[in-house]
Length: 307
Image: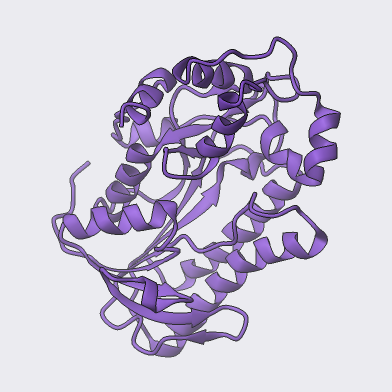
């Protein structure tokens, strides 16, 4: 697949987050021009920043001027707070309302957007056991699946005026700088490491480097289009992941798993995050020519903990 050498003018939402900030830096290093939509423009030092507020519908004048590509990463943290009814609505609204505000602004300004790249979640498929899941697999049940479905449906409304819509169903992104790995590391470091639930649930994961590289590819190569499972070709079970991480940290793993009922008592409905099994396949990415630098968990963890 041929790479486009054209410099892109890109508007990024969620650009101050763990993944977004690194995507922005990488794209700038490759010569692309970045603008950022954020609730706090004062935090952005390396790009032209515009204010927006999803609840009030405010959005900075001129944010779309000259823009041909949008990378939409904004959304309230899935596991930041307990899933009350109010919190679950906040999680969905932050994704759906932000998308519709962008699209409303595009229509009102007549902006000519060629490409929209949106994050989505590997939990789109719900709890599926050992089933190998492709982009054609059906949407599942549970809150994560419902959130992803509403999110993607909102993104698809852009097909009315945009040439390329790309939705990346992102797995657990591994990095020492934050996110899931830091949380998974804590109990193991305290000699309290144990597999969760049955331990047989599949984890679709990806190293941060490969995640950034995928965004780079879909920005620059116009043959990428549609939905992509964004995870390594070699998923692991929760039990395998726990053992591999404990080995890197030189810590033991308890022989008894943390029971599902304990996790549900501690986390409530949010226990779904660690209990669902998604054996997502990135074969579509591989067919498109993408090459993972860290396809195997041991290599990924070795790189992460050598820093």
